[in-house]
Length: 255
Ligand SMILES: Nc1ncnc2c1ncn2[C@@H]1O[C@H](COP(=O)(O)OP(=O)(O)OP(=O)(O)O)[C@@H](O)[C@H]1O
Picture 1 (cartoon, protein in one colour):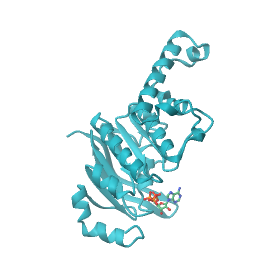
Picture 2 (cartoon, helix red, strand yellow):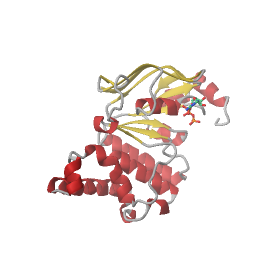
Picture 3 (cartoon, helix red, strand yellow):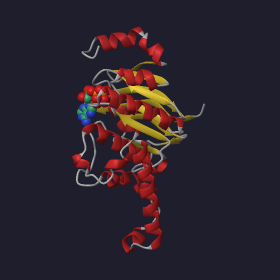
Picture 4 (cartoon, protein in one colour):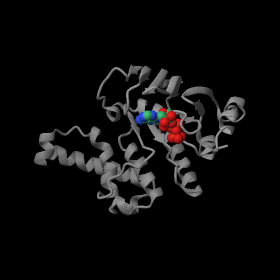
């Protein structure tokens, strides 16, 4: 099994508050790793550090053995890491297709000059990008809506659009922050099957989610955080039976 992402002694302070405290875990190629824990456990903060949104206070993050923490302004999508956000990040006045194509800008090699002059290479690349975006819209079941304005789409469809946008960059690692939030039971089940397809196609997934049905059905392994610390790691079955995990959840309203 090849390690894709490795996180070591990762910590993050906000003022005097230690939101994440010396957390270690790794994601292997082609696996779905779920990061779970009660509200405020530090899950989003970990995801934000792994995707370069905020720097760690301490610790190491390595992707394909390359340290990420030492490089400022890293091209994460170009490297092979893309993400979705807990709060939707969509462009309401753009079409669904245009929203998805935004995810491909790092894959474009046409120079700014040729894009500006609309020269042949840029046009060809634009066509290829559009084809790939259409393929991903078909994968998530949004082909019919590609010319609609994103602002007119219901919430569940926007969540799918975000996943298509993260996938057109052909990432090796997809980071998902609560993708099932606000979805109904059928939408959540459809999304779970899509994540399994994405994994089968070779993209690993690091998933932060509260929906236990989704986690238990698709995660290969689970890491549990509580108050910034890792309290458990194991298979879905091991985690369900872990007394420390049960106690952490029983202390919250999510139990
Ligand atoms: N930008 C920030 N400034 C100050 N404190 C923050 C900031 N971001 C997060 N925190 C604090 O860090 C801790 C961990 O927050 P985080 O959002 O990572 O938790 P979480 O596990 O993702 O929670 P939830 O499941 O509710 O989304 C919380 O105490 C939170 O208040």
